[in-house]
Length: 370
Image 1 (cartoon, helix red, strand yellow):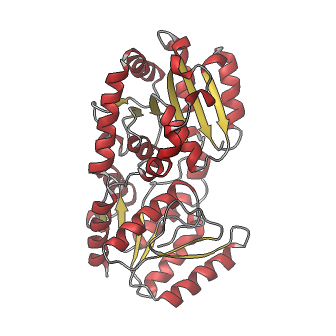
Image 2 (cartoon, rainbow, N blue to C red):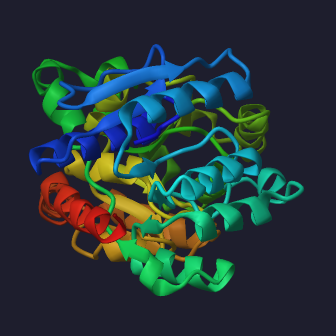
Image 3 (cartoon, rainbow, N blue to C red):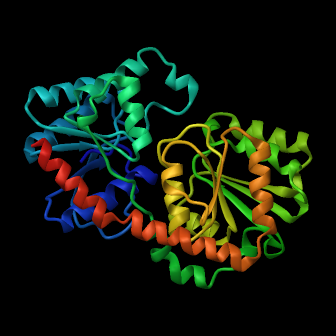
């Protein structure tokens, strides 16, 4: 299994899946970056042969040497270095008669400038068409792969994204002693809404900022936006906060978030927001459900297949007014009503996105490819 980053949600996904596969008697080696995170006890072999500061060709050669040493029955790719080059590697593996499964976490890059880059769409098409098999996280995602890239439906297996409940379990004892006042003084007197993860345009932070002045009582609400900013977005969003005169309602926590920080933020939130413009599936959403939190999300991608009206609100994308209406309902809800919604979130996380079932389905798919 190849995951080139060694950190964040994609690496957590890879580790959870690999651990699950081991429980189903699959021998797994994860090829990833040196200095990778270790989110929990790893039951699989790990090969940290990718050096972030090395050149592309050197890293490709390191991966090739690992493949030659392992002689795998199948290669499962979770992420790549750059689509505009890596399609050649996947083609080479196919010519070597090694089955290649690719998880299509995203149809294309989210940000428009990257999505529209020269040959980007063509390169993704080559990756998807060259792979032996593809995994998508929902029926809607599978259908978009078929229609956009003319992929035969028989090549794609729909397997849900697993939960990130390990974050809560790992930090549970710390959270029981934690006071949310450390994040926002007076937080217990307001409804605390959270957006966490990399701050990018497609995630719709600007939509939330526009929604806040539309609320019935903005003073009863506080928004936390936490994560590593992309480009100059943070500067743009700070200017929006000034222009909308909502400084008292918004806190930015910029920078990469480790697991403990993520755990504290989700634990303290009354509801977690996902007003995305574009998405296949979101690890941040699965983390929120694993903490038993109500969610508000755009009705796109896998979200309608994940969220029901007992655990949150689905809204029209790119609509500050609909988002404000959903936030108002969360503000008006009593604590026990939100707790009830949170219990449904946790049930969905546990019963519909459990890694044991996902690993079992993935193994079955592997066997059809070999």
